[in-house]
Structures are given as C-alpha cells and as structure tokens.
Length: 184
Image 1 (tube, one colour):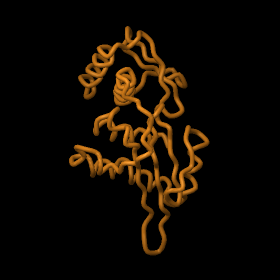
Image 2 (cartoon, one colour):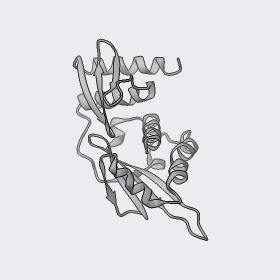
Image 3 (cartoon, helix red, strand yellow):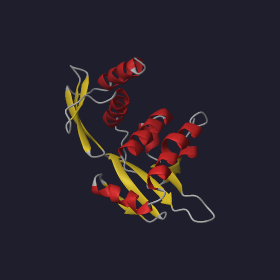
C-alpha cells in the first residue's frame, strides 16, 4: 500500500497531460505497454505488471514526453550533489546506488563494460571503466568506476545529463538510479 497514492497521482497526471489509451516505452532493455483504461503497465519481456516504483517512473517519463520536455540531451553531466533538493537523499543515494556499483564491480572494473552486452549504451573514457546507458529515450546516465589499489579503495559515481532535471524530480532520480543499479 506504500506507493498506492503516488501511483494513482502519477496515472492522473499522465492522463491529464493528454495520454493516449495505449502506449509503449522502452526502459533499459525492456519494453513496457501502458494501458490507461486498465491502469496497468506490463513488461513485454516477462508479461508481468511493473512494480509500483517502476510504474511511477514510467508514468512521470511519459508525462514529460507528452509535455515536450524531452529536449536533446545537453552533454553536460551532473553529479547527484548538484541536483536541487538532494540534502535528505545524499546518504541514501550513496548507500543504495554508489556502494552497490562498487560492491558489484569494484574488484572487476571490466565487468562494468560487459553490461553493454545486455543494455543500450556506449563506453565512456571518463574513468578506469565507464559506460553511458540509454535508460529511456533521451535519458542517458553515466556510470563511472575507478579501480582501487594499495592506497585507495575502488570508487564509483553515477552522473546524469543536465536535461534529466526537466523530466524527473530528485526523488524520481534516486529511484531511477537505484533501479538501474539493480538491473546491472
């Protein structure tokens, strides 16, 4: 029941923005069907309903798309700390996103590059290992990883194209980043 109010509000806002009865959207390597009349979002790959937090992100993205907010990407990367209103989210972002990237790939930075075999994106040269994932159309996310040595532990960062601030609020960006890391 925790997400029920947020899910209903996301549906209402999407419908008010002029949504069509049926839509499709690609999120990482999965496509979802969005049915307004049934108020259901189904994954094409496994034919199961999207989890509530995923549905909210999808609906917010589609609403932004309908409102014409999906401009071309800026090419300007923002650190999470540069987003507005992050004060209450910084430690959660570090724990749920950054530390999970480090735990999964810190001992094997090349493993991060192998993610591109499953997800749309490209290699970046901005760290020891870095990839830019196309999370949604016109929503790139840069994941950077630096290998550790005798002196320093491995470190990671997740950066967002500046255009993301037109599409999602800070809370959505945290949820989206956490979703991405779980998929890796």
